[in-house]
Length: 323
Image (cartoon, rainbow, N blue to C red):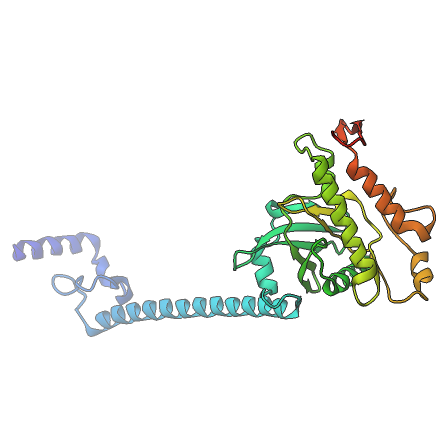
């Protein structure tokens, strides 16, 4: 058989003009056995060495590429970590309740990175998110909108300072604050039943007379504390209205939103502080000196009315106490 193959190859080389003899050694890389008789190319050591060298170079290139890729990925990961860590370090967190551990990362995680699905309230200057802390405790995170920055900054400082100094069962409780270049947040107690305005103007809620009376009584007790019992002066809420009264699971009232509140430390600066009073349209008294009584009286009449709203029109109001 070998002799026959030898004869066939000779005939082939005769007709082809011995083309294999003109091939370089590199042409046989990967074909180490394509040499020797009857081929004119001898099985020299150079061919096998070239093949081994080629495989060695390919393996070395693969290792180098892998090392470079891993190195670049590691650098990117480290930079991302440093940027995130710098961001968290810049955020200033103040805690008013030592039993609760707060951090910028914890607040972001609790609200699922301020996901829209967790929004429970929205206003002109803030958005309120429902959050769950690692301990399982539910909180309300009030994030202020920074598009009108100077005024928002003022409201943030005022509300956090006010709520941080007061404690009463009928005032919303603050757990802490978060302040950074990108956000200003108040971490508040979560009140499950929403605000009073929603219950007064929806068909699904039917507040009884006793519930309305207890709500009004709770608001009055909260105001008495703010005006007479804080221990550091008087606090004027300046924006008392049903949408700022939150109701817990027992429908007990909690006064919220102290963004435009005023602190009066003495009788001397009372007149000065009252002169620049702000408030919502319809809830500011014509005479500033009677603003507090005017707001409470308007709130009281609204709370005690049985109002049903249909197509943005009040259909019926009844001030009579049920027999």
